[in-house]
Length: 437
Ligand code: PGA
Ligand code: ZN
Image (cartoon, rainbow, N blue to C red):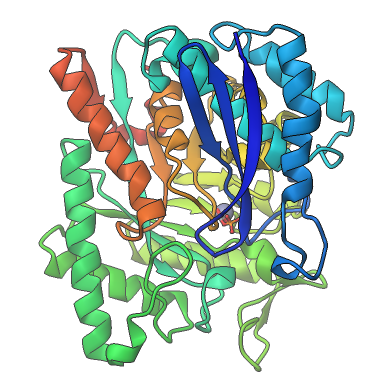
């Protein structure tokens, strides 16, 4: 059982403080560090920030660390809960102790850190890899495993960069690769071609990176971004084999009932939901796009439902659903989308994140696992993706340590499965249905 749970303030990839948890059992000390978003939705669980302006501009998380060390840790240890079989009970005890619907009293950042570390401790106690533990925990059959298609965000805009682009993420997805390692290679080659291309078109000063490791050249229209991607894919020699995903994160530019495509410039360019929908349809017609996330704002259910009516690609709800089972159920009722983005810190416990994902699966939807724009080298979500058999994930560009950590862990898992002689496959074109078979 657990002998100690402590928390420390550490840094995330944007240089902002975040919570690290260390949880000790007879099997060792298990660590987890929580991520943090920039384009956060209103329905997310709340990260506790100190608000003390004299340190880190008020962004310190010492209070959240005290929630772990002084409140939650002692309570879990006193209850004698065993991570090898009690993850659900540990998470429930934390939810009850916090007592608020959005974890704002003790902090979702405190609670999630313990939940992740407890899962790691549980896996070690059972002598199994984390992905196997999470497969068991989520009730996912694991007679064979599925390695995900890595959707890599190679062009950054929105709240993640300083360029004029309103849309936040342009992702490349090597659906025609035959292994995860090959998928990573193709994406890295395309990323490199993109760098050369941007440099030749916009100069050396244009190859700076956004928060998720993608380039952020001085372009504004989605067409320009997609043309760049298509050209880079071609130069890298992967034409027809790499598809595209877009996350406009449109809540970031939603104001007074309209979407402002010029929100990062001095020239407003307002579109209503119908006009924005037409723009998406135009892009879908012209480019090999297989995934569209948050095309409309977090409360614009009717726009989602309307767009979903004749939508043949994957339509993902991020800010719309907030990895929250209640919002997933509303989305199902309204037929608002066909996929749930899964961000563990949107809800704050592994048990609830799995629960929301399983609810989405039960409606026939897919689940798309995601990092946050503020990340760390913690690679938990790599194992979660394989454990829940989601068939795809996004963890940013094939560059910057905190992004690459997840892809490297997935290559380790692929090698490990091969070495053990276990059955596994790369999700490929069927990434939306990976969970079904
Ligand atoms: P965030 O962005 O982590 O800044 O919220 C990721 C996303 O919108 O998917
Ligand atoms: Zn998103």
